[in-house]
Image 1 (spheres, rainbow, N blue to C red):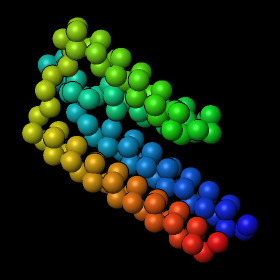
Image 2 (spheres, rainbow, N blue to C red):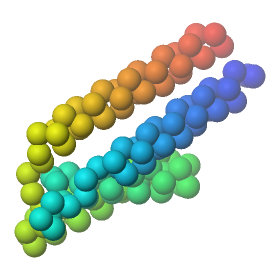
Image 3 (cartoon, helix red, strand yellow):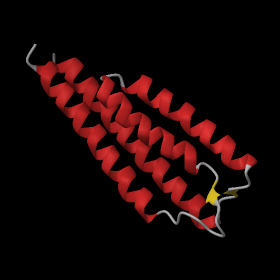
Length: 120
């Protein structure tokens, strides 16, 4: 029984760390080139908003789903308006690094949950 609060605290801490990393990476992202955003910009923005929505609703999966939908709609609108450009080589490399960080954090979260389950 006493391990459940620690599991919740650990998962919440990992989510907060993930959010901080996302904010730092987003600030370093070169926004516009020739007045256009790179592909996936609005989807990432929508997911970030979805994390905030999910934390406030106490349902992270629902929030991310809502955010991804919002981001996809924004991305589609921007494409129609010609405000989206292909990603540069540097942006693609950065995206791979971000994916590695996120997968690492996801694996760390899974390991933490499994440890708490087996120690229970």
